[in-house]
Amino acid sequence: MEEHIASRHFTAESIDVDIGRSIVIVNIQDAQELGLGPSSKVKLTKGDRSRSGAVAITKTMVPRGKILVSKDIAWALKLSNGELIGLRPYPVPPSFTALQKRLHGERISQDEMYRLIRDIVDGAYGEAEIAAFLTSQLYYELSEDELHSLIRAMVETGSKIEFEDTVYDEHSIGGVPGNSKVALIAVPTVAAGGLLIPKTSSRAITSPAGTADTMEVLARVDFSADEIKEIARKVRATLAWGGKLNLAPADDIFVNIERKLSIDPWHQMVASILAKKAAMGVDNLVIDIPVGRKAKVKKADEADQLAGIFIRQAARLGMRIRVALTFGGQPIGATAGPALEAKEALETMINRKGKKSLVDKALSIAGLVFELSGKVPPGRGVEVARDIFLSGKTHEKFKEIIEAQEGDPNIKPEDIPLGKHTYTIESPMEGAVTYIDNAAITTIARAAGAPFDKGAGVYLHAKIGYRVNKGDPLLTIYSSSSARLREAINLASRHSPLIVEGMLLKILP
Image (cartoon, rainbow, N blue to C red; front, top):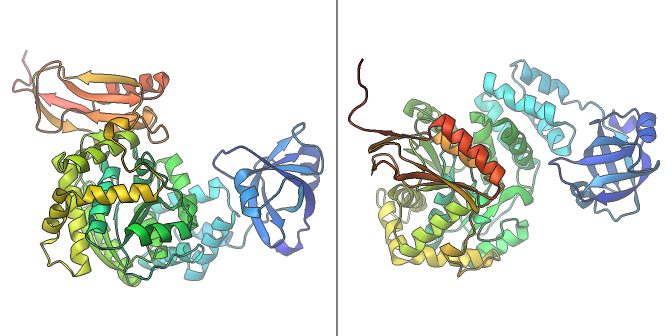
């Protein structure tokens, strides 16, 4: 069908603009002749390269016969300013029938899933259609076969990286503030133990920071596949962002939409994680599922169900897996937000001690990876990981990773800049902290600017069980923007992120 739609050729130039999607700016008269309206999808071609984009219409920015394209289109087409490229309206893709079936809760075949994901990657669908596909999973769960088809399609529509050695990895489903820094300790511990762990992560979807956001405070995280392989060859580990690698590229599209909607459907999350790991050639994987009030997974039986999905799907991919259910009832460590978490992780490795929730979790995860390797007996992994950590080898390996990723290996915690605007919430009474609201901490940190403002976030002076006096600090909010700080303070006043209780609860009458 698409082949019968004629292309017109336009002189094209790149425009330095990024709104999170591919944009083509077209003169209004050219648009009318081609039957295009605002946000219409078009296909752009140059030689054997093609890229889709959404139309923006102008009367004055470009003359007839010329178009402006966003940077990502120019990069994909290897466009030099002034070159001719073909443009034609994008027809309704054949996979639209499969999308409609999915929206009505009907099962779709492996072939239908592949064509749907391929068209999403090719840019045939806009944000509305992709959002509909994602939200449909909240109401009509994918079957096990559909989920396997989705994972396979996400892998096969992107690139793959292969390593000569056995590949290990760990990944958390997130949902708990402060969780992103766990990998900054677990990964170098595993690598210091001699295993290959080329970890790639996505950026935050609903949390104050993803592992890539936090590592980016200390080093570069956007690498090509060849660069990732070279770093891994040199230091046995990476802590990188997967977005530039074209690994399961559909996932990057999905994550962008999920972030805007603040959703993370279970089956899509499983597909996202396992597709990325399969594309990276991961043979052995530890999955962390935090469980607790206001976490993504709130109850143990729900965690068991999710773990079962991971285990069954990993088996179909030929991947060995262990799933750890961890305590997610309060934030990990004392911080939430990229720079704050990077600072805490670095302090913990340098001092060889830190918040128990952070150290114990990181070393438990690393220990499970060691046990998966078969080089450490069952139940001994955490002991091996702790010995590595206490010896200082974790920090030494982390310095190697930072240097290999073009950061300063000698950076000190005090060198990390935090948001210059701060506000501290104090305890209204003497008592003990009895509850910390994960969702409120996340909302406050994101309102302050995290993760895009690296210096924004929350520092917790007290955790559950801490005794405090009236006027003692409970948490400090950081932001690079005074306006964002005010918004975060307003949210904190409405949502009570920490609850302090004394012995006297109420007086009647």
